[in-house]
Amino acid sequence: MQCDAETGIHKRITLDDNGVGDLQLLMSTYRQWHVPRHVSLAWSDWIHSTLNKSSLDVREGEYGLELVLDWSVTRISVVVLVPVLLSLAIGIWLNSKAWTDLATIQTAWGTASYIVTAGA
Image (cartoon, rainbow, N blue to C red; front, side, top):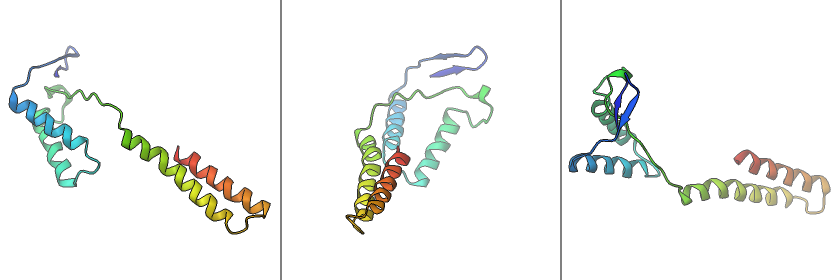
């Protein structure tokens, strides 16, 4: 998007093949689970020099990015399943110390429910 800070207007622009390739590389890097620090610093420098004209003044920046993201089934599954599985494992482990003691059972599953709630 081309930004006009004075009027507050954003216009879609047409990119050449090099621009499309650069943004495809940026998006593929963005979608990675872990990006090494030197790669993320290189991309931030590229964005600062290319889109912001190496200026810290917002009014001098000429371009902006519009990211339209979709759902990541893998990330959502990990975020939901890890606290649930961790709480079940800790609940069973704490409960295994005394299977018939009511206080132990309440403590184990109270702790497990706290873990799953804190994970949410």
